Structure formats: C-alpha cells, structure tokens
Amino acid sequence: MTINEFNFAGKKAIVRVDFNVPLDENGKITDDTRIRGALPTLKKVLADGGALIIMSHMGKPKGKVNPKFSLGQIVDAVSEALGVKVQFAPDCAKAQEQAAALKAGEVLLLENLRFYPEEEGKPVGIEKTDPAYDNAKKEMKERQKEFAKTLASYADAYVMDAFGTAHRKHASTAVIADYFDADSKMLGLLMEKEVTAVDNILSNIKCPFTAIMGGSKVSTKIGIIENLLGKVDNLILCGGMTYTFAKAQGGEIGNSIVELDKLDVALDVIQKAKENGVNLVLGTDCIAADKFANDANTQVCPANAIPEGWEGLDAGPETRKSFAAAIENAKTILWNGPAGVFEFDNFIGGSKAIADAIAKATANGAFSLIGGGDSVACINKFGMADQVSYISTGGGALLEAIEGKVLPGVAAIKG
Image (cartoon, rainbow, N blue to C red; front, side):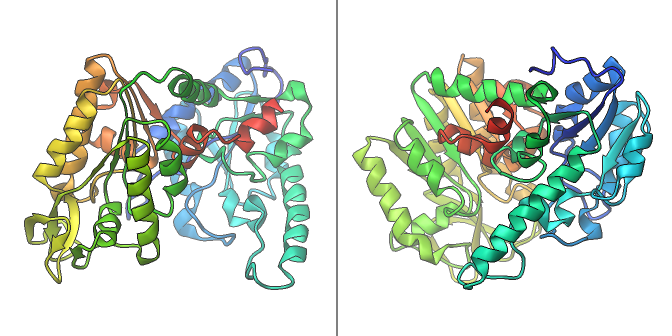
C-alpha cells in the first residue's frame, strides 16, 4: 500500500517522523529542514479527514527523561508549520486517552520516544561482557514489543516517514509495523522520495563520482569509506578526520582531535585507495586555532605540522583548492559531513568552498546528493539549498543505504 492510495478519512494515523531538530540554548529551532520535510505526509492525513498522531525522538537521552530533549519545546513550531493547533502527550506510552479523544483534523504530538529504553531496545546499565547480558537483551526485546504494541494501539494506520532513523530497528521505526496489516502500513512521502534518491545515485552513477566525507571521527564512517573505495573516482576526507590521517602518517597535530586507536585504519584506507585507483584527497594545510572558540587566534599551517597548543579547526586555502578541483569536474557527488567547525562563523571557509564547488558542478549537470544533519545545516546556512540536486534528511540511514544495507524501517513496510 502506498500513502497516495490510502484514504485516511475517519481514521487515526500514527506517523513516525524525524523531528530530531537542532535547538539553541533557549530551546529555539535553528534548522527546521526535518519538520518541513515531513509536512506533505502529515498534511495528506489531515486533508483526507484523518486524525494525526506524530511520534519522534530527539537527541540521545539514553532511556531517561531529560527536559533538554523534550519535544514539548517544538510544539508551537509544529503547530505553526501545520497550520493546526498541536496537542501534546507528556508521556508517549501513556497517551491512550488523548489518542482516543482525537477527532478528524486534530493533531497529537507524543513526547520523546527515547525517554523509554524500550524504543531502542538495548539493555540499560549492563555491559555486553556481563554473563547476564544475553538474558537482559532477550527481556528487553520482549519489553520493546510491548512498547511498540502500545504505540500501535493508538491508531488504525501506521506511516513510516523518518528516513533519518530507518537504519535502526527501533520500536517506532520497525517493530510497530508488526501490529498493522499490510493494507494499513506504508512509507510516507518523504521516505518514498529518499529511497528513490538513493536508488538514483546507486543505479545511475555517472563518472567521475566524487564523495566528500567529513566530520570528526573515522570510526563512525569507516564502513561507508571502505564501501565507497570500490565505487568512487575521488574521495575527499575532511573535518576532524584529517588529523587522524595526518598523525597516522607521522605528522604533528598539536591539540587537534584524533582517534589514536584508528591510526592503522587510516593507513589501511590510504593503501586501499591506491589499490583501487581512487584519488584520495586529504587536507594538506589547515586553519589552526589556539583555543576551541570562534574568537580564537588563528594561523594557517600544514595539517601535519601543527604547533603544540594549537588545533586544526578548518581546511586551509591550499586544501580548499584541491577539494574544489576534485568536485568541479564530477558528474555524481555525495557530501556527508563538514570540513571544519562550521558552527563557528570564523571556521566555515572549508565547508563553504565545498558547497561552492558542488553548486558549480550541479549547474554543469552533475547530480549532487547532500546527506547528514551537519551537511544539510551547512547548505542551509549558506542559503544554497536550491543549488544542489537533492538534500537528504538522513545521515546514517543514507550512508547505510548507499552501502547496500537493507534498512529495517523500509523492510518493515515492504517486507
């Protein structure tokens, strides 16, 4: 069943969205891309004459109630975006009465699903090495099913529209689908669009293919990096990862972020790139700062010769040129992760250089796919969202889909 074939008239729909939006210290949304992305699905339910129950997670509260991650903070923003006053259920697992009272055209937003450990289904407070872990895991899986069943009991239909969490087998993204028959569960419009975009990039790769992987850690990206080495012509690795690679090759990196346990992995990536004939583009110079702050003193120095007490916070001018050269001639481009601490305005130059080069290549006919919260925030910060081919709301899900993995959130609907 597709969402366009389904009529929600007189029905209650529970929709899993990804409203894990960035908030400032006052609880105000700094980038509402994910809310805007979900609107077509949410409005379809209401336009049909259905009642709408919205569920999402926010942040990583690790199974405990934490006001910092309360979805109560975004109720007004969601109301404004939908044009309907949104009710709020302060406990997602105890919303039976509010859900039952919902009338056609009304909207209920549930509190953060991850305030319950059952959402993620991982045992809490016990290490994997503990002999009792397997039993705890089994018990938690049963509790996860009960939690999913409770959520399912609120509605007549289930819509999965949270691409950003589709790679997780959580209660609300996959397990809940078991409690709806095939004709009452479906992917939302955003999910359908995302899945199509990934298929497009995978089944229709035009070369040269350039992938840009940024962010602070090699460890979180290693699977996708290794997978991309078999697909891309150019692989740009930037952001905090730069310094792990510099250190692995014997460089001095001052106080820069580094994963000392991943130095051998970095060397392995360099070797595999050579073997696959991939042009691996690493930072050669950087903007170093004497503290982690926007108003820090700065200097340009080689990425492998950063003075003691200084740390690399952005790509340097020569690095930006080599990034642009690898991007501008590409016909397929994937960008995930910034080139520096873009949250500080004085360290956005590297990420802006990447965005400019992508926009130029796209104007020349390249297909450009931007995915992952930080890259999306970059593109929006620069006001360049209309200059790329497609912006994905998912980071990890996008990368796993490109790795060729089956996403549990999609499999739960499509079988």
